[in-house]
Image 1: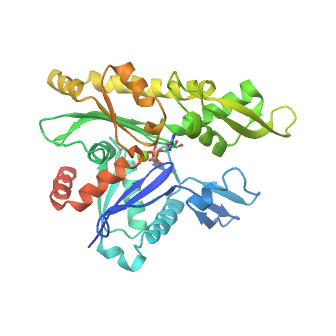
Image 2: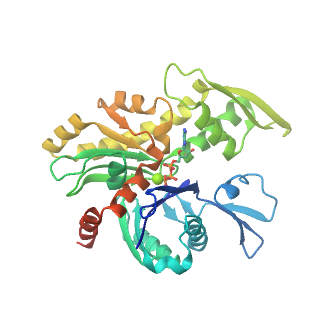
Image 3: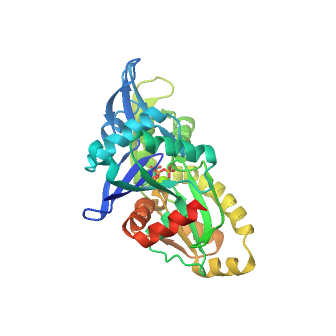
Length: 336
Ligand SMILES: Nc1ncnc2c1ncn2[C@@H]1O[C@H](COP(=O)(O)OP(=O)(O)OP(=O)(O)O)[C@@H](O)[C@H]1O
Ligand SMILES: [Mg+2]
């Protein structure tokens, strides 16, 4: 039996192979370059992302998963099939594959149906869908039990999942369409408005990743290249961390408003346990300097981030894929 876990993120797809070598076997941008009216696939993953904003008229870059929803089922399937083959799962092997597949917290029936259709289209027969909060908790090395509730927040490219859960179930939780992508768009807007510079999506993401910080002490700077808003000629300017901090902070503040709604629903004993255990933060945005400290200050709790927060969800999926007892526990839970 081949055992894998898939985290089909809005920004990055991660695949874990639990049967050979146990580890993350793939992490590639969830995007596809298509050309012509027939939309034939030209490149998938890293090679497609390099082309964002640079394609000629007849080539288009598509992110088939947007804000956690499958917006282009056909291309999502082509992309995932290609990724499966890159981790050594060829189509003739698909009958023998057991998959743990991450889905947003509280995913609606229609969204789950889209994920089911996608898995079917890819030829995956035995698939267990598990909500992100369980996976990010497990992948961040939290011990899940019935009696010790944990508080998790995963901030990705397009979706944030917030939940308080135990092995018994999600006590309160939600997913919302907020993430790194909003921050990138905000950086683009700010650079145009304040500096008169038009920049592309890749540049905005690079600025966020390189100098994004919510720390008061941040002094990093980088050069942003694009074109002048006035003349449309190529232009570049230096950007400081402090100039883009607000583009990040406003979305963290929005996320914390929703987190407050989750915490408000907790019974007193659960709230007490959460306060003692603190928050487990994961997702790519947890890597931004100072974000964990900022959240900790705002909610008045310890915030714990693992070494590889962007992989927490797929690592959690891998743990379930590897451990048949845990797999059975979740299979039973989702069959109820
Ligand atoms: N070192 C870094 N510093 C800042 N941001 C980063 C860093 N690495 C990745 N990111 C950002 O994290 C986001 C991607 O995170 P992640 O892989 O957790 O999202 P995803 O799982 O693909 O999407 P989602 O879960 O929202 O559907 C992107 O916005 C990316 O720019
Ligand atoms: Mg994710």
